[in-house]
Length: 254
Image: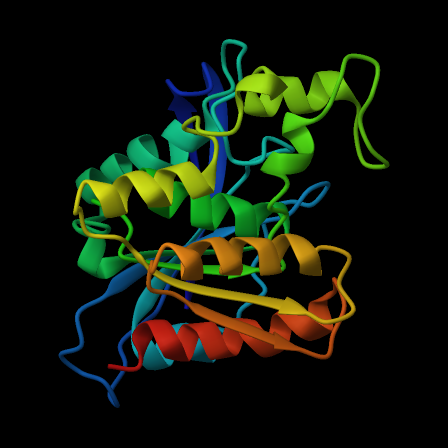
């Protein structure tokens, strides 16, 4: 695997940013398999790093792109220089196509994340279905209904009202907006546009379990195709290591 750190000036963020990139070398076992691209999105209070076994990327011949989303929820915030959804959904794919010849279509570009990054993977794929063909969402922080009920001076144990307002916009306007994965999925279905393939999972001891069950119920109610899995586990790398391998096989074993 070639490990590359790419620095660039982002118009979405109005400042320099960087992303990690890993590109497999020649693979005799799978000669002729076209190279695909997988975006990995980190969680809240985390950073850009690779949690996938490199042999999987080598086996299936896909490049790994690991951007830094700070604590943005991978959304376009309300202030200047916080368009993280635009960064992932438009700017970086365009850069990868031009510079590396990758991420040319939804059929060869996938996205996966954990916790805040699980929300980001699901939301971004639904926001840009023409760019991302598959989304893997692990232990996703699907908190739009919680955010919608927040009032000034409030918040939760993770962050205050002002933080969530910056990420999601005015809380009372979140549901039904472009920052609401449920609304995005429903719009795609109603417009008969192609939806990304979706794989969701959550541990039965995870504090976000009911949030994930809620999204699963919503998608099922509206007959939106997806896979949903639960098994023993918490909000930790033990669970994510298990399911990241399962999601990679689901994405790339064709």
